[in-house]
Length: 449
Image 1 (cartoon, helix red, strand yellow):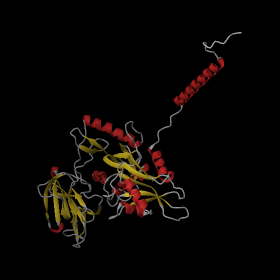
Image 2 (cartoon, one colour):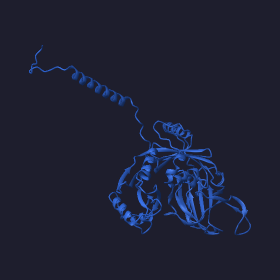
Image 3 (cartoon, helix red, strand yellow):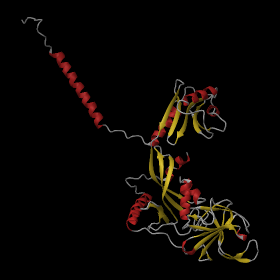
Image 4 (cartoon, one colour):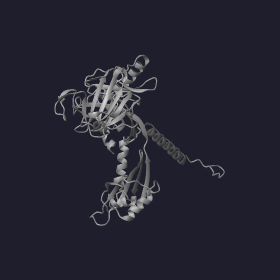
């Protein structure tokens, strides 16, 4: 029989075997977990719309208070002479809750020096059974183009403050619409800013008679630069790159000398020698030719055309030139005459006043405001009487064959065609690799916010 020797370590196979098996199992489990992590498909990042939806859900539902109904959003705009606290109370909450909310908000913004018109949304919950005061569950306001602050109440009654800053990006946008009302109103509804719309109206004025050529329902297309947030909200618009209406197209192009001009699809400068309409959006009320004079009462030659417009409407120079007359002239009332190249002149009558600094000898550029519509002289109401002179003789402004603009050639024409092709692909819906295509129809709600 073998004797027990305390100096020798006992060797027990079962415990060691169990430990080994356990170790192998742990390794196997770890390998499986690691492998699963490696091959498991990663969830795609949330898009801006999903992020906005989650924020809305968190704001209106996640912090709902026990014993209260689900919160409802109440839009509030701060009124003149009103404090921030007063405005929060006006949303329907008790003074102490309004004070608490403003105290917390003061950690992130100036709640004292605020301007009338500042807007915010308050989430208000009413007690079940409608007994007792309403409770402020949350408050959200925008503090900048891409910055916002959200205040939400936790279940323990505390107010939690969150500041959020969205990333912004620049992109080019394709906007399509129909003429409803004036061209100015229709383009503005698609997100074009006043400066951009003004440029578009001046450009089309070379080719389009706004009174006769444009009809309700006519389609038009714009391509312009804009700055947009992650959630798709437009916070700024830039240059007008392209516009088309009634088969007329023009493209923005920067020339070698640095001048930015607009050209048609052939590379011809769309800026004609003279504008067809020197008053934005005005309608023609009287044509060139024999007519019964509205004041004298007998037939007389009308040596220009009249545009009906309200008193004070800006009048622009039809072309580049020099002012030769700015004076009172009989039945024409306040009269302005501008001399252009090649023996051409334009005249503007019945003016209420002249543009800033307009006087004889002053050089003006096409599209520059030179006067304002009035009813001075022999006039039955506010309108512009407009004339075109050729070598000292009046000609019919409608159909007058005035000189055309410049035409691109050589390397400039090649560069223009490359840019034109890129714009054309965007308009057709063929998105270029380096451009973001966005349709106005999908973003109008964001533009109105």
